[in-house]
Length: 264
Image (cartoon, rainbow, N blue to C red; front, side, top):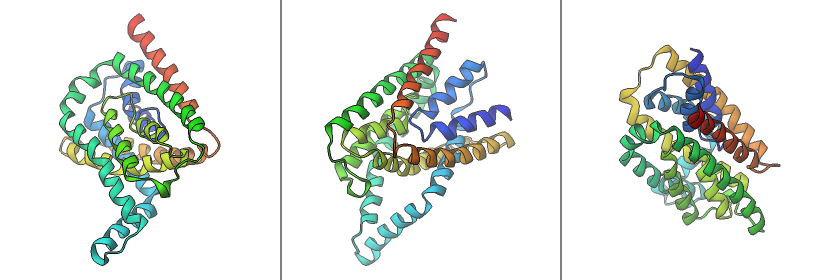
C-alpha cells in the first residue's frame, strides 16, 4: 500500500510536470531498494492521470468533440474542429512508434538505469537551453488559438522520444513547442490535451495485463488526485515563471542516480 501511494504521487506529479514520470517510477524504487513494478502497473497509474486531465479539461474536450461532430454532420467549420484533428494527427507518430517498439521499451530501455538517468539529465539541459532560446528568439509567441498544423505535427513527432524513460512526454512536447515559438501557456495546454489519446491508447493495449488489486486501485486514485493538483499548479506557475526549475531538478536527480549506479 505504501509503495502504491508513493508511486501514485510520483505519477501524478511527473506526468504533467516536465520531469518524466516513467523515469521516476523506475528510479525511485531503485533508490529505495524496491522491486521494480511491471509496465502494466505503470500504465495503470497513467490511467489515473488520464482521468485527471479529462477532469480538468472536460469542457475543453467536450467542445472539441462537438466541433468535430458539427463538421461531419453540418459541414460547419470551427476552431474546435481544427484543433481536434490537430490533436489526432499529432498523436499518430508517438502512438505508432510506441506500438512498434513496445517490447524494446519493456525489455531494454526500462532495464538500463544509467540510460534512464542520462536521458533525464540530457533532456533537462535541452529544456533549459530551449526555453531560454525561445524567450530571446521569439518576440511574438504563438498562442493556443493560433497553433498551426505543422507545429502540432512536430510536437506529436517529438512525443515519440518519450518511449525512452527519462526523456519525458511532457518535457519533449513542451521543448519542441517552445522551439517553434509557442508561448509557455500554449505549449503547456497543448501538451496536456495531447496526453489524453496517447495515455488512453497505452491503457487499452495493456488492459489485458492489468490486475486491478486494491493496491493498484489505490495507486490510480492517488495518481488522479495528485494529477489534478499538478495540472492546476503548472498552469498557474508558468504564467510568471519559466521551466528552469524543472530542468535543474532533472540534472541534479540524474547525478544522484548515476553516482549511486557507478559508485555504490
